[in-house]
Amino acid sequence: MFGNRKGQLCLLISLAVLLGSSSAFADVLSLKQAIETAQGFNPDIRSLQNQFESAQAKTRQSLAPTEPTASITYNDLDKAFNVPNSGSTVYQINQPLAFPGKAWVNHASLDHQAQSIYYTLKAKQLDVANTVKGAYYGLALAQKNIELNAETKASYERILATARRRYQTGVI
Image (cartoon, helix red, strand yellow):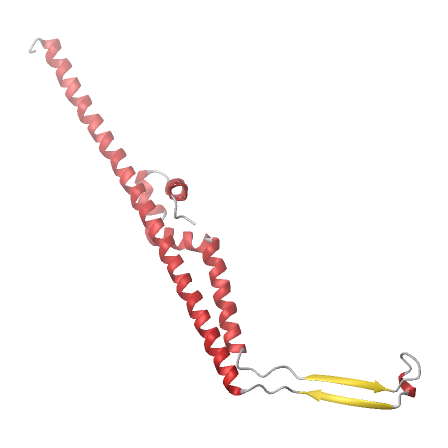
């Protein structure tokens, strides 16, 4: 989601708005909080979390037996839906039993799929954390540059004031 420069710029601006002034930089939102917030609102991470939970549920369900079926059949009806006059009635309950090896193979396959989704989720979380860290430290660097520029400006203004005084007194 934040892989391109435009996404990084949006994240940087968002962090700047959240963090406010440079004096409140560390007080408003810590790096850990910024990462948790970004990961919490990332739609890709939410989607992967839901996929992982679904894959885990499918894995657990893969070893369960199939559902039984029950049916009633009325044979030799003289008219449609004339059930009391049927020639014979067949009651049937079916419970399919699959080959056990097939269930274990299916379970292993679904487990590997769930692990794959889990590692994709972790990679996405690390990617978002990396992007947030870059934006966070970029913002911190920008704020430090603003502070340094303000100090430099104040220093130049002091030098200018000193030069004006010397010029007015005739020292220069």
